[in-house]
Image (cartoon, rainbow, N blue to C red; front, side, top):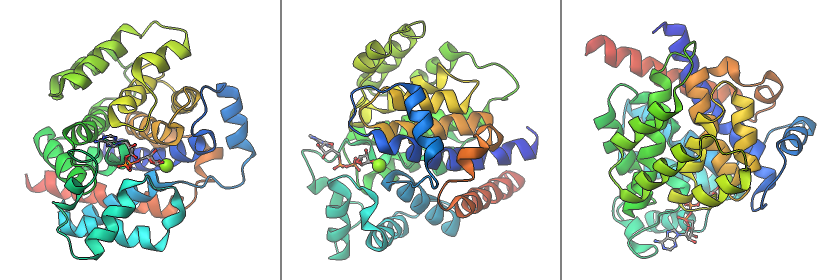
Length: 314
Ligand code: AR6
Ligand code: MG
């Protein structure tokens, strides 16, 4: 693939996370909303402010860039320090508790098991995963391992880990596809199905395929789910992407219009769409207003440089 196109996919996925998150942020908890309404709300705002989704995505990218790959202890401390600087980003209930326990000296890879029964299956480890998806785009075994281990910091339930791996894989597959060639939605879903192990996700991916010709948004939202749990939100993001693969804007507006956990489903949809279509597909009027855009682009470029070096020596 042309190196400029590949680079634009790295930046597209990370900035896409931020834009999707910020566009969805005003509608969290709504039952359903018209795409037009989401669009005009985003257009009216002077700054697109992101939430914890993008804040944690930035932490992942910072840690991966600094260590040229995954270092769990470092990533956990990066999350914790970022949270302590900006605790007002809208974090879910679990992660702040984890950060306090890590601050008190608990081990980064054990602490998450103390939350909920068997650890969290919230979507918090999937929403932030775009940097893993782009960095490991040509190594799906490595991607799975890093998705699981990074999830272990805050979301140790197997459904939390699998949701992070599914979202990372969707980003990676999108990076590897030529944006000039029309996407085959069924094939994309089938490849994800081949990658994923857990039956809960396999069933959701099958449903997504069955819903490809569905025109009623309420049916899509009801069947796939739009909740805070990873299995009730990653499938909706994948669906929003495959059903609107030619347009970043349409994919994100559709994702948010489903209601529920709109910022996170918007963030995950933006990550996949940006990874497929590249940074140029993100509407300029949104991209330019994204808070900390230049820093996010810089982090994406650092990950891209690591990718080039790894491929050069591999
Ligand atoms: N059993 C029952 N409920 C659970 C379990 C479990 N094992 N695991 C999670 N939940 P959390 P997050 C429910 O706290 O994933 C922000 O708004 C439980 O109700 O780990 O980081 C972001 O933008 C729990 O409170 O946080 C995202 O929208 C909830 O899932 C979201 O929060 C969330 O899990 C991310 O939250
Ligand atoms: Mg959020």
